[in-house]
Length: 189
Image 1 (tube, rainbow, N blue to C red):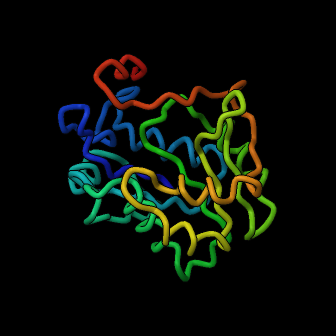
Image 2 (cartoon, helix red, strand yellow; image 1 turned 90 degrees about the vertical axis):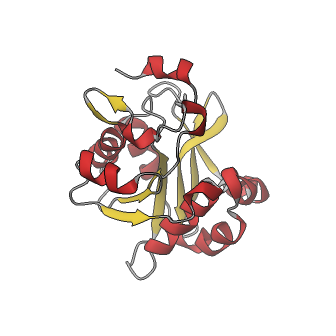
Image 3 (cartoon, rainbow, N blue to C red; image 1 turned 45 degrees about the vertical axis):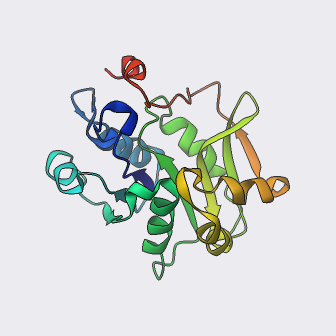
């Protein structure tokens, strides 16, 4: 699942999904990373300027989930994405963020390989600090959806279940920076 709904408030209202990276919208790059890592069905949660994102980015083969409540923050997008998985038979959801182009397919695949069933809670780590992507076994979805609010996403749930999280070190193969401000745009090519 790719969370790509934000409006880019700190970027002057430019949605991160539409930022250019390697000549294409950042959302398209992020989908390519998930595909290259071996993710089968990819759900892309959009919000700000969703129609423009769909028109400009190649999201073919993806399940596009429009989050009408995107302005409430990442929590609403996480809930929308998890809701879109209901009835699909999915046993886990790997959650990735559109604004982290330094995380490539190798890190995503490493987190995927740590899946051990529907009770799995797996997180990439960077020098021991929890980061993205995060894999949630289906047994955790109701609890995550119930606590996902504002821009915190699953943070509260993960804090409550810290002992159950399997950290997968990825600092050797990825950089976990975010594209949040004008200064961060230097990371885009």
